[in-house]
Each structure stands twice: as C-alpha cells, then as structure tokens.
Length: 170
Image 1 (cartoon, rainbow, N blue to C red):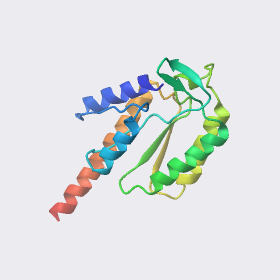
Image 2: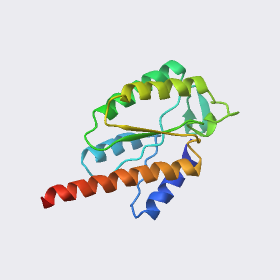
Image 3: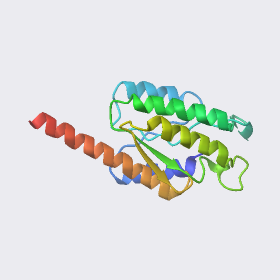
C-alpha cells in the first residue's frame, strides 16, 4: 500500500528521461524483478515496498500483513546484508513517518516501535559499508519522498555512467 509514493517516484523518473517499469509486490512481481536485474537489464532499481505482517484484508485478492518489531529487526538485518553484498552503487532512503498507507500516524498499522526496529537494524547493518543511508522526515507516500528517492537513484546512475565512461576512455 505504497502506490502514492511509487507514483510520485515513477513520475519524477519519467521526467528525468527514464523508461520506468513498476513491479507489484503481490504475485510473482518480485521474482520477475530479481530475474531481470540478475540479467543486468536495468540502469537502476528503486524499491519502495517492503512486505508487512499483521493481517488486514486489502481487497478480495490481497491480504496485507503488518510486521512485528522482532520481524522488522530481522527484515532490516536481511536487507542490510543484501545491500552490503551489492556490487554497484546503493542507497537506502528511510521515510521516518510511515512505510505504507496504513502505517502513518493514526492509521491501523502505525507502530513506531516496529518501524524503529527496522531502521535501527538497517543503520547497524550498513555501518561501515559503501551503502548510503538517507533519512527523510516524510511518509513513504508523501510525493516529496518519492521525488527525493528518484533524484537519489538518478544521481547514482549518472555518477556511475560518468565513472564507467571515463574508465573506457582512459
């Protein structure tokens, strides 16, 4: 339930000249994304949606689940481990005011303790790594967050292309 944030990011990346593909977390979208990424078919990947726990019926086809604090900590450690192993430029953008439509203040999945467990595990797991950690005082669905995450991806792609181009010219 991050559609507004994803839409803002998609719009900004399109404005920057990228052809954007959106993969949904429901169904086999994640496996398809990983398969295409392993083939080197993307200039970059912007993933704004981590799965939740605590069951909630989103629609007749999708049930949303909110993670507990312990599960968030485990998820943060797992994400950090994957990012530490990345061979290209990587960054994590943390929206400190909520991670999904249901996770903002006053919403049913608002759980600052669980979110903080995720963020702390990410911070700890990425300490000393090449992965940049950027924190934003926004909700994930705030258009400003989607644009900022898109700008960060664009910056990394542009810097990587410039470095790769210089390497070939030398």
